Image 1: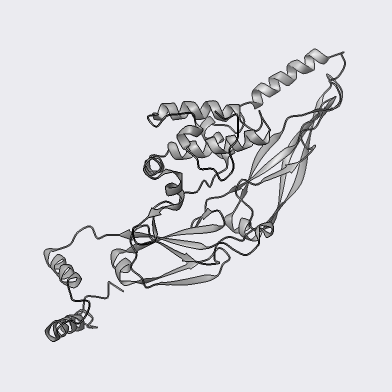
Image 2: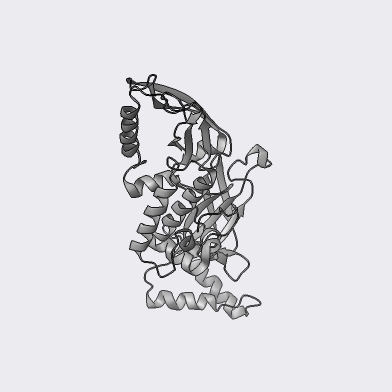
Length: 356
């Protein structure tokens, strides 16, 4: 099923990625992810195709192992899960999922270790060392295993770019059957502005070394840390604005600090419902220079909080407000509404301040 890697923009069927039907149980999902994640782990198969498959099965597991995400995907598919569905008013509703963790971190959380092959590799190398004692070394030109590590990068660092110094321990055996020495290697990662989550930084010939085998590459994978305010969707940032029902109906102002530290004040004058999205152009993530530069957009998604209870009088007042004539009210209706609003907004005895 995974013999051919599909294009990066091809839609994903998460069940298909794991080789499952839609009737799959949680046990089936766990078994399928365990099998495929071990098969395509970068320390077992370092081919480009395997890296793509490893990431796709991690995303599939992330969605199908989370009940709310799985339910949304079952109804709306990948596009609806990530981008929302039409709300019937020209906008979108729901969605906005993004796979924001490293495939290696999904693997580590599931298996309890970043690389379950490490113990097996150590035993294999020990047997190889014993078998080669007093014999010829391996043929020249063989390459050692790739070693893969995550490096945590904040969303702010991915936006503006930064320099990170990382270290790993390289093991070296100079003579067949000889002692193994360890050396701490310090490497510099140049995180470009607009860096993508999952971007790979490859350092050739930095891996472990033994006679007749060239050191393999060391790969660091940029893993975006969870942000308290935003989550990323490509070059865009998604902010969930939790507001009361009255704000959704009557308008509000959304105030927040942007990813670049700038204070934003976003007026909302139109009626919004739960899941509605307001686009603020140019306030998203920096866009890579090779992708045209500039910035993505800020997507403000509204989460409306309904009142839990209403008294009978409150219900009648709301009903009356909705049925008040929007155009050309009679003089009597206008007079009654004006008197009501004057009483509600009275600075001493009024009740419409909402506790402000």
